[in-house]
Length: 281
Image 1: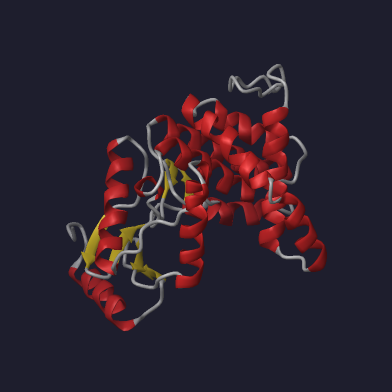
Image 2: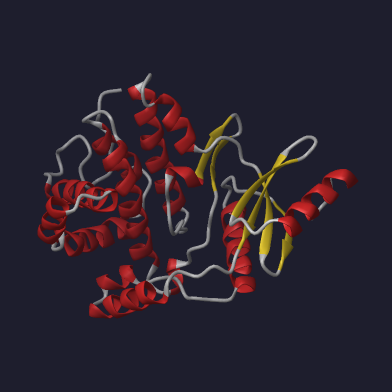
């Protein structure tokens, strides 16, 4: 796996592996950048246990189920498997340069989408929102290949001269729920970011349309079951938001409210349920 690295770079990489405990670490080598990901830190048991209980409330509630808790070595193997699946399907993913029982060394895919959005936010609203729309379309392409991401977020996407790329595959939702439900959850999770970060009023619809142009029909069907389940929590979420505002609650309200409205919109809307994009270009 270390082919192509100079001896001095291998020494730098191994020293970085041994000399830090940071969860994610960027390391500059002589001719490239690499990333070290360390595993083993688990989510608090209480939250994990509550999600397990909630997931037993019905078939659609399985979308709340957390990925199985596994040791660090199994988490490393999980991420490598997902990278391999996406690579074999033709998607850009990081190259695994080195693995240990508790860490991975990965190649750099280039600028992540979130960083590019932050650079554009105050100077180019259309360019900023175009990245959200592109992300939703690429997620739809991923779903059309019968794959899912698990925790899609603009920081886990890259976009550069070589194209769009995916990274960070620590979640394995298909281990605990059907693939269409995992894909619907992917879309809802991405819309936590789309609905809260969009600067232009049409962006949310354009992003949904971009996903619908590619997504499989069974993912749309699962979305139509998933969103109403989340929407039942909107009154409570709005009450909590009035009493104690927080970014997570705001994202939940904006994303769920938009998707609920979108699912009720007639099919002759520029982005109806048939997934055809009829927005003016």
